[in-house]
Image (tube, rainbow, N blue to C red; front, side, top):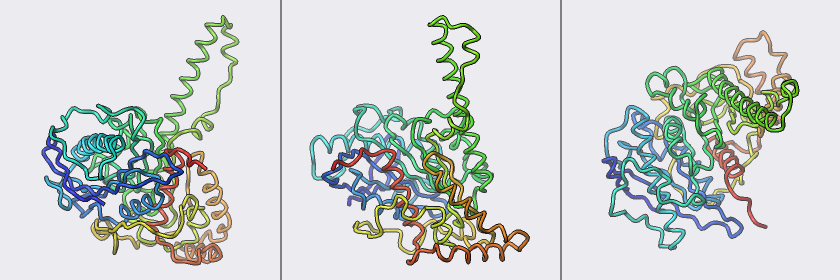
Length: 412
């Protein structure tokens, strides 16, 4: 492990960076570099946040990444500068830091040095792109961003696009408060908006259905709008190709008109954008009152690499450094919602959630507390035999999804 200040002269700040170099498995040829982003520094967010720490531990346990990096944004921890009020400042810091990390990792792969991140004599110019001087093949960047960090990563994604293999955003605060205070609308637009330029990148959105900063309906509508926009663009492209082919082969206008195209639902199912809602979980992923709901939704152990932690990673003990009270109460009462999943890999989760809802139909008309209690009792048999550590379960799920989308298959 290497924890040090990395100067970014072009940005006028030095950031505290925690780097873990990994000796990959002999059966893996992965050149993936993982960068994990933390919550908002103004509310105490830092790289020792329990979700960030859990993601890094899970990544280290897989031994499928050549390097695992977490860092403190400006004003957090030992990083210099003043805490940013908007995502654009932190996003540009991420772009420059990613440029430096990618170049350093490329040099490390070529020269096999001891592992210390060497400082460059020349500063990285502010206009530099992450592709400058880096071969197109390796290394590849994987991003996991939590809370405010998800807005930063999304904002920087168009500039990082040439080297990003996949991205997972956890609990993005894209509700009304986030749009007003943090400019979440522009960040979501860069990630999944109608004019997004990153639709070819696998994108995972994970959020609790009791999140304090975005409602289920807001998030579902945002994702569905993104899927419809992607389907429309794909349909237009398909029509243009067919029309061009028809003209080239002298097809008649009637022949072109009778050409059939895939329905929008099919095109949406082939999207690289996926949404998974975690039942009975809030923004902070401290705990889940109904672990049976997670089991019913197929979220426990679905991608997980195992339950034994062997990494030397430290941090994240005792909950989030971001402070749950500052963000909002995590014990808000309410009915247990079902799991919702959008995307070709999550049909099983959606089916499980639907069957769970159907089995609880007898609760109609009861009070919220009574309905929630009935649902919990109805899933007693589905409860895992051990206590679920929610941040760990989330991290394992995310790591499995990222590796399934971004990593080369392991060699036998």
